[in-house]
Image (cartoon, rainbow, N blue to C red; front, top):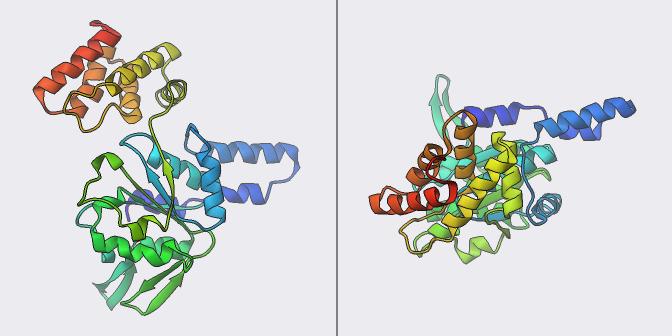
Length: 297
């Protein structure tokens, strides 16, 4: 799909370091450190790393449910690197068609040629295919996932007559935010029941603080203040805010502070203004920010 996907597909597979050590304890240690450096940081919550590994080993598809900015995408990136598999990510939207996923015929200099879509490429290469916010895609689009998500593990391509059989390394992962789910945007039972499911929430305070320290490079005191602010904002129930302060927003605020922006304007820009366009709601959120971190920041 995009340049990021091409980089992922073209990158060397870290799993080779585990399967074929360089020889000797020192070389093996160097290989392990290189492997760890290639794995995006992720703070485990409740055994989801092991469950993902078991699902991959057993060729089971995975559904991840959770609010915006809670770490769903980072978790998949972490697991793909950890398992040494290429990762193809598709951000789903309401114009996404089955042809966008599977592929289509294109007219080139030498005539009509077939071009694989991201799903077909993932099957051919044994990659992990991650469909982010899958409920945003058209209803008829998700039907193409059914033969891949059950024990057949095949992708029929009607336009070419092919039937791609998924290799053991291939894994289908989908996610969505239940907070946006309604009668028009939900998974059919026939789709949902083909997946094992993980429920994600925002991290526990100690874990979230460690994430901020690692991701933004801030000290423990600042990370603790931001986590305290998030807890206060997440307790609000009487304001018209679709989503509350996510871990992603906290990291953004922390990075602003780390670059020299005072805490109060950093929180206003990265959290308050990002959460709402309504002036009254923004004022109420700003009061909470000032009450928790102080007027001076």
